[in-house]
Amino acid sequence: MSELEQNGGAARNPVKCRLCLGNVCDVGPLRQSHIIPRFIFLKSKSPKGRMIVHDGGADPAYQSQEDWKEPMLCASCEHRIKINFEDYLKDILYPRKKNSILVDGPDSIRIAAKADQLALSLLSIFWRAVVSTLPEFTWAVVPHYIEEGLRLWIFGNTIPANWQKLVLVKVVQIKADNDQVIAFLMRPFSRKKNDQTFDFVYICGGYCVVFTIPPPLNHTFHRSDALRPGSRIVRIRKVSYKMIPELKKAVDEMLKAGLRGSVSVE
Image 1 (cartoon, one colour):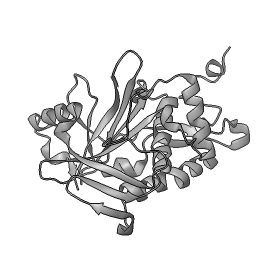
Image 2 (cartoon, rainbow, N blue to C red):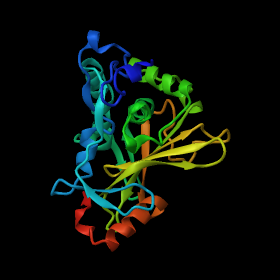
Image 3 (tube, rainbow, N blue to C red):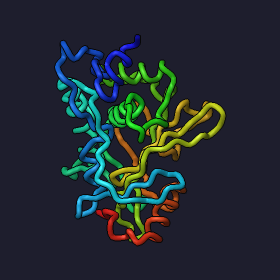
């Protein structure tokens, strides 16, 4: 009998931390870990505490208070994720100190930040989606070697110099028609680019993040939205929500359903 069968299913009674692989007998009970950091969820909520959620499929947009969390990490690894990655994401994506912003123009923002650390911080979210048992993340399926590679990178807070050969990480900021950031939540989805390459797409908290696995062989970083390995300056392009087909479809449906006032706009 498998460990999953013995314990009534991983979602109901997990016995190991998914990051350090420690047994709960040794590392203590698992925390309710957010797949997408809670502070990003909060950026997607309206003043009434609700979010507009769209699953990218045929179902219409709807209002929700969901959080997407499950028992996954021990207390030590939960803390490791926070101080190494979530705090960094908060500082870069929602900076309180303006001295990190080099240029804030109409088309893009340039930030003094380590692209490698930002990529690893975003990949920590993708990895959580991959190992999650929640139905919202069933699309996040990658070969075992990628899953294990990501776990080792995240656990050790280190990323190889040639990480872009395994995955491309792209991030853009989403703008509404009034040129303000539009904070909208979609259930993560995938795009099949060809027989071998997939885009895994997250839209949340005013940003669209895309993980491409495996990267195209002919990819160049010039005028690309992908994070450039080794760079200490991160450029994040500002795009209209209409430039993202799945998001435009969701917003159009939302407006048609009369949910205009429920979208959080910063």
